[in-house]
Image 1 (tube, protein in one colour):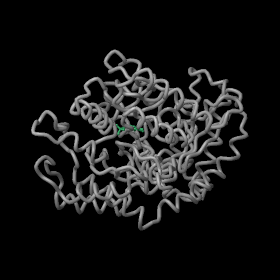
Image 2 (image 1 turned 30 degrees about the horizontal axis):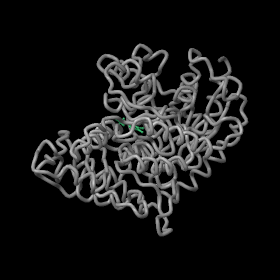
Image 3 (image 1 turned 45 degrees about the horizontal axis):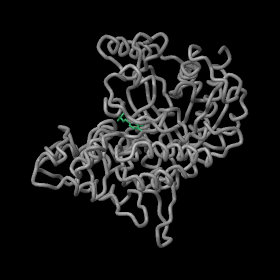
Image 4 (image 1 turned 45 degrees about the vertical axis):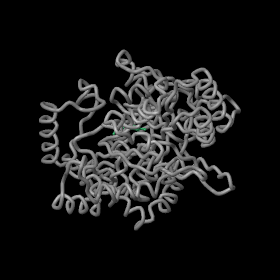
Length: 482
Ligand SMILES: *Cc1c(COP(=O)(O)O)cnc(C)c1O
């Protein structure tokens, strides 16, 4: 299987190559691509026109196939063109494609809300998440959560609570509100003059642990710094936003779940809402349905439970990776804070396509697959295979860290395999690794010099082996001349 794949990549089909070249040329005449310095296309950065998707494969017009090692920006769950989701969308499209969600309702929006609330993390002794507000992408979902938190305190007569706390190295999207609580300089710095000022607390990132310090001790040290930050701003903060367990865009950095437990306590003690951004971590990506579940917490009566946020942001995998949709889950108490005779006290936020029926139908079909295919259980076996295949790479002379959270494995590349010897950014090791992997039929999209695996859940043994062997070759090739 593995050998055949390589063979397939080498045999060039001239007609297919021509077809790909034509699409590439037409694209470069009219499109402006996301997250791309367009000047690098197509020579420094290849541009690959894709004709079809099939499971973990992307099939190019060039006649080649590419293993999607990053689930197409972390969206795909059960494979590309998954027939059950495709069918659910088609059925819904023939029934009701879209209807205004103000003053009107439809079954997919209601059913999806019911099911998301039933699935949401539950904290013993705490009122459950009870309401769902839809938006159409992750950034828009974050905007909704931030605005809701701020507005709730206004309605309550606490207009002084205007600040948000976010974590260093966090990421919450690209719109101005979401960028304001993000801390990735590459995306943020240029727009800084436009952004509302947020307060940043140290990241609990275990990669930043002091020599000899455990991941848990590192997390608790970050929580102590957060406590100090809260102390310095009494009555000024409305919410804290974080990515539980895994800071994805920040380089797949992982932290101990003890951090989330402490954060929950600190937010409660300071009357601050906790916003969990599970846009990337949700729907099984880190091993549990939601990452919050890994921060276990016994209830007052000793009952089992986990940390629950006041607001939970979901998107990316929500529709199985088929359509853009976001959901913000909130408590009844937040919802109740907007009930009033005045329209101004209502949450008037809206998007034209709020709760689009096609997207909701896709999400329902994706949730069905979790049940029918026992996805979380199957993923445990896949994650164990990923761990085994990643382990040999830990010894590579340029690999400073191999870390895993469920269906995510990350490899941190440095000059001599120590944490404090990063590659010179100008040597663009990540880009070289990207090209090396792509030439071998695997889509890896490093974050800086961090390579990672975040494959569709349907990835099989042969594909995992291809992913691992190509990653090893890409690391070798990219670091050889750096
Ligand atoms: C991707 C992402 C977002 C933004 O979602 P978009 O749909 O790209 O706007 C927000 N938060 C996290 C944690 C993400 O990974």
